[in-house]
Image 1 (cartoon, helix red, strand yellow):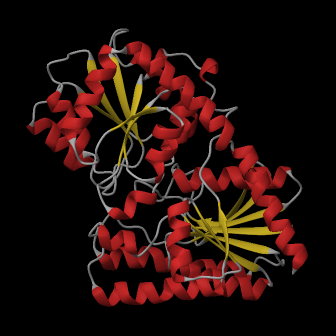
Image 2 (tube, one colour):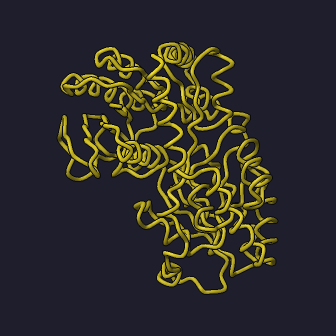
Image 3 (spheres, one colour):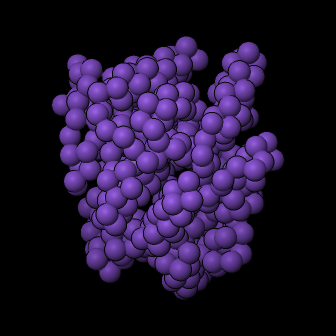
Length: 410
């Protein structure tokens, strides 16, 4: 098969969609498919074009044998709606233009959403290239933007909802990261080819025995410290104030340390809050390259994965869970619904706390501080669970089989 992946986010950027799409691409390519990527100039999460890409309208490169075409994107650190729209639509139009000069046909175009608006380019290019469109939904937009208060303009929201339904209609397949996302899509767009394409983990890369705990020593932590790690985007959806406030509740345990690794729009606010509360047990670290993350996760004892308490997130599964569990590090999970069912109730890979409840998070952290042996057993359970159900090799193979079957039928 010849497949074009259209996405605003791709390595060398770090993040959930970047990693997931790259991992799918290299596995499909290894299986004999021809994979091409059309993406933006890398800029995320600092919203600054990376060195080596600045000042360019178009560029191209090879990443592990995959041809990657890039086009211009407007980048701004402003949170204003107009700046966000310019960011999204600049790539919509530049990707259309760049696509005109990719002189080949494709069997499928996989479009990553959000941003939802990129679907406009995907529909245009699917017609131009004679390709069937796969609209891959990793977050329900504009619903999530509205619920989080990121977008409040009703005119924009209503038209975005119309665009969303139109894109589902124009798609040959709609794939989703969670069962909750697919359920929502089915209710609004029945009789559509749907495929569950969850996040997963490269179990050969995230293998605990391959990494030392040297990072712990290098950063001045003691062997008896209990390190609780949050690593990922420091954004609105995560509700990371719960970690800062839980740290305040556990100041009486000097050996319990709370670490936040990453960058994002609310990092400065969290740093100010930690300073205001005078918390010596909270540590901030910058965003890290993928190659560094196994060392950091290996050096920690527990990971914390929160989301804000919204009905929207009942079907959410934060991607960072998979890598953490693969490294045999259990999770303190502040997410209800699908994620809790999978990883806490079925996988027995951690403890759940009530979303947005810092008292509950602090209590669960105290429990594990006292019961260190439980940390080890939960960690073992976690790796076993993701090995069985969320192995990237298996997930890519199932996806490829599904695409091949449908292509042969049509």
